[in-house]
Image (cartoon, rainbow, N blue to C red; front, side, top):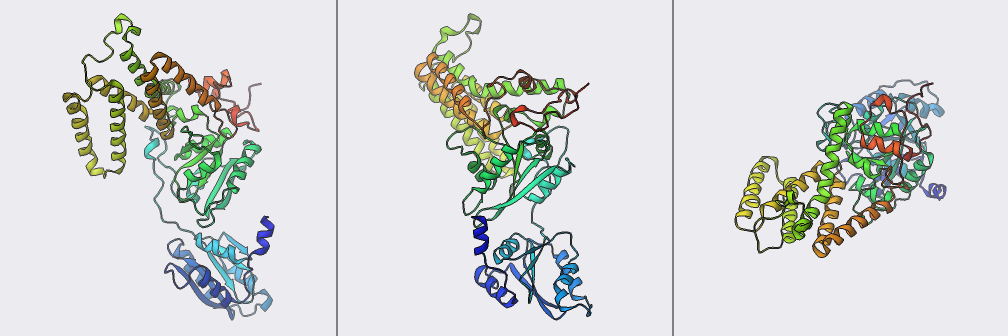
Length: 494
């Protein structure tokens, strides 16, 4: 099918006037102010240079034009003009194209294309200079110690700062264009002799099968095509904006997907426990990293089970030991506890959304208003009992402790479902809810990978690496879940 499409593509005309006419009708040359053409003569041949303002580096173009205009070699044979022209392009990236579709795609991607009268070949020169910010530490993955660079919206920069960390000749970045209209650049990153060829082929095939007009939402749209998540709230891929985290996963055997215009890189496959790890654990000593990890696990568990358990004890105080009789509301209220919990959860969600949309200078004032109105005044008027605010706040802090935003939101939905079951059926509802929760996670597969690995299926050695932050000299094996071709990251002791 691909070869048939290629045959149907219009070849580059040998007359540059026809190329101009095609660009005017197809792309809007002369209508769109940012699309331009520079026409010069080289050795009595008409040469046209097509570009898009704002996506190209002007200095590079001027340097190329200077080399062409000041060429005075009159002894070149007519049949050698094209080769001479190609040699004039003092740039490290010069490629030949033969169809108008390729010409249009390359120009709109920020490259320049040069065509010469009498030849049906175009020369593509990569002088892209995309507007964007410089690499900086991601807001969502900050560490106390460690690198301060992170991915940006430029795919070229992202692959470059990854390759800076892995100077291996087997590191591969396969690039393709996806989107009938957007033609977004997507790169598949992997290490050739480590990553599973089957996994690479699965990711490559799924990306090639994407049929859509554009990827304006970039990586999120790509994710939904790759994993077919549907309405399952749990994340099936992991996102990172840190280059060191991406490089670590490449060395483990994962396959990464880089999407242009997005500062996040998709890591595949990504079981549940991968979403619970953070770079900070590996920037501290193993003992401190283990303590940080256990604290994080505790926060995640609190975000999921604390409110349902407290509601159960409120409804069934007989379950509490005598020493814990203080748990539960001490005051009677006209509003059911479960309704108070839902109101507080919705109120906190309002605050989270408002914090995202509130300008930074006003965020402090908004926090003070929220603390006064939703906190103390809501208790004074009898809308909430104090315990509801306390436990809802602890559960929310546990959500923020979760390194993965997607996992935190998914756990919040599961928590609300558990609260409803406890309110309806009390203890049987909690047991049924937790059972269904475990069955749900067990049934999920992320790119043919068990979601609860290494707990289900049970692999003790791999699970020990999840529970404990192991020292690097003792971590000789790569995770078996990615089926690495090279199993050992360090030579085994003889």
